Image 1 (cartoon, helix red, strand yellow):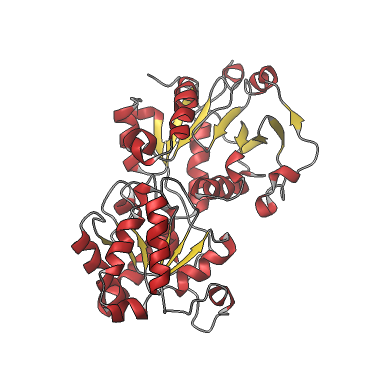
Image 2 (image 1 turned 45 degrees about the horizontal axis):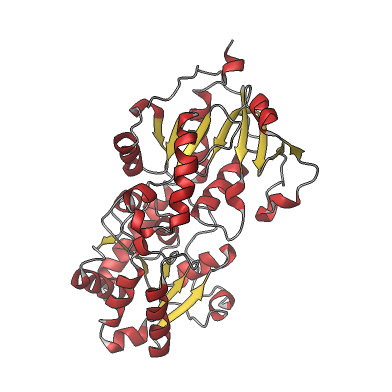
Length: 382
């Protein structure tokens, strides 16, 4: 499989259609990526024109369109049948930030965040397999270029799909300025709503699904000395996920025993306070396309423990403590060190802040625009 090649466009001549289906709540990491990128593309001088696309409708993008992430309330969207979308995409480049190109788009850019459905099929529900089988191959056949969030996933795409190396670009994600260390004197309101106090809990933000290895984290927490569990209960935030009935039973047991707080899905507005108020942050996933919560926690000055697999060491940049979640002893020891080793905690905090300062959404947008400028729809090339 080989991506078609475009021509180099002069700066300022790119016409783009950007899909925003991933903004639908509850917003995941893919939705955060789409929102941050779309917000920076509006009125960007590197684009001659920008249109948004959502479930068969398209409209010229304007400043303020994505306020509060409510694209469904935008006025007078243009309905596009398949033939009309095909016609429009002949002189616009289409970017799907969420794996799939809609029918009617003959050529576009796709962001592939991970290959977890291919690499770990047992960790996904059957309907997701069916969706990939139906859409992913067809999208790749019409793709001009692929973007990944990390070098780790770029290597996988080239090896497993296969795809030519010059047709895949890795562009690291960024972190919003609102993720920053919170002063000890800051308002306790966001924490008090969840029954938490600053430096009195540890945090994990993750969807409840098998590859995230939350069950291993809970088992390791239960193995900690009772006094340590009592001082620093684990706060678990994130969507309900799938294939998790045994995990939900473990969560209920941890709550009954008093060392676990299950917060469920947490609003974006509360996340900075939760990160910066935590004693440490834990993200034991065995596979991620990027691992945005790791970067967000580091930007808030919170020491991080994550796994040594996939993109996570790349994102952590040497700032996090790496522990295999399937090694119960190693994970338990890493938890204890993150909670009690003050020398390591100070080092992890400073290094994490340094890494986070070098990852911005502005950089992500600029590098994405550089990909757009490499490509021109066929009708615009003559």
